[in-house]
Length: 573
Image (cartoon, helix red, strand yellow):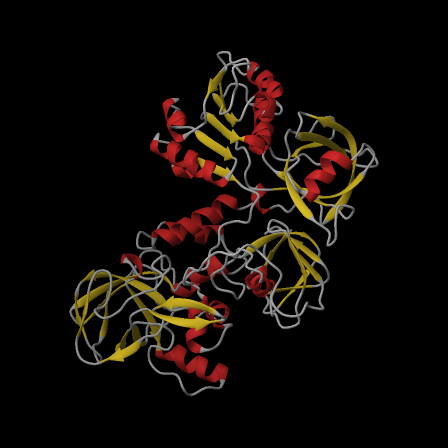
């Protein structure tokens, strides 16, 4: 008969880790006597990161004595104490390959339901002192599991554990964990998991995403690996500050079709040293077999100045294949395209796509600029809109003068959230936003307030993506910089979005550690190649892995948490 060996609790505390402060509740200690279990927690227990741990779906974490013995043998250690793996309940029995999602168990006065496997997280490795443990828990099929509280009550060491109900589907904790984190997953098992009501909403969402992307374009890699030379076929000055460059293959073969909204990344050895890398949205669909980018000459912009002032037809540029998830999706619902300044380029490509293939859709074109002289490609956008029978055009000029022609197509004033709300956009629309970060935040708020589902609001930005660093105590943001200490002697690592290029240091174990040292914004959770939170487009070069990821990322992407450069690399971060 399974039994309760230890009840472990602990409140979150600050722990120093790799020069940063982690606020975590993973340190649990055994308690004596009867303890009250409540819907959200055990008395005396807490979690530092409620996004991944705790709450109704993850009120209690369970780990087994059998797994303790297994890891003692694996690591050659005999110093483990109950609560070492961050669990609330240490139990004898209830192995991960026998317990199923939706099973219910009575312990003392309380009753519980199994809701999901443990969330893979670096903090359990931090607690045990074994950094690779998050990957090992999954790879060795010993994750442990969370339970929700069905009936509150007191529990105590020595209580027997009685199964009160068998979950539907007979999907074990270990099998559920493998479905999310390991390769070779069976779509039928994904559907089975989604049919189990007890499975937590977070895991249901992950499984729905896996089913939705199975065999879709999202699984395909870029059209070509690394950088290839493209010839500048034509250079067109759109206005005083924006220049369009048309690019074609040097041998005249057709270029692969991009998706409307994607971008190209250019490497410009002639512009500066170290070699700068920049990304620019495609501003139209494929035209006569050519790509078009429209570049604004920024003050003190080394690359933009080179492209707009010094590049001539016939020049060869190193170009990575079209990339990006900010893409127009097919459908019948209205489309809202909102932009400011040079942010119009990706949505203009979407407008080209709509005019060519989706003329029956309702389209709202909304753009903000200082005035007509600073509104490139305005006539082109207007002409496209005239071909769409259900198009609405709203252009806002914040600094228009009395001499500027302001017809019915233009509004004097800034494009603000109030101005956008006043347009009464259709609530069933899908929206695409591109412009400065503050502008996109305002527009997103206005669209959401107007009734558009936030899940249908898409944004694009070429700055580094917002960080995902669970558990780290926030600190004052610093702009990306060279790593401290003497320069490394390894291959050149370029963080394209952050504008940092530096040799890989001898004392760094991974690209992620180098990015952290440079204050390049990073996104991660497990740091051992399991969760894929750190998946990053690899624009050029190759990497080696240590440890090897449990599942390889898609073609053209890398897991920076366990990757080291195998020669010079360029990353889209």
